[in-house]
Image (cartoon, rainbow, N blue to C red):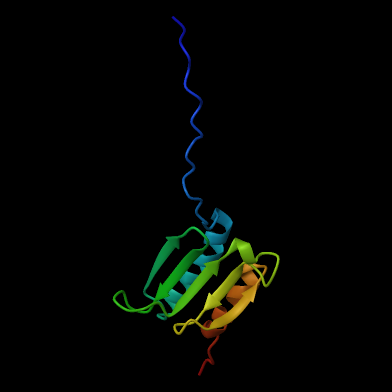
Length: 114
């Protein structure tokens, strides 16, 4: 009587997800904190999808996001993996470095002092 071992089953790979790393979240949350202190933003949400990571910013909890900060690694070699999108989906800024892309939102903090 001979025993045969079954062929090895290839491991199932969970679908990869794109996520913000600690440094990227530090930069985003730093801006978020300043905007909350200024009274501009109230809430946020983070989504980790198969092809993108999205940080959504809300003025109020129960509405659509006013801005979305996206990371799409597939666009790294083309237009840049980071993008800031407005409420209507229009790309406000796209680039290779997160800090330079977020400058479009930091301009909202600059106000004339009376």
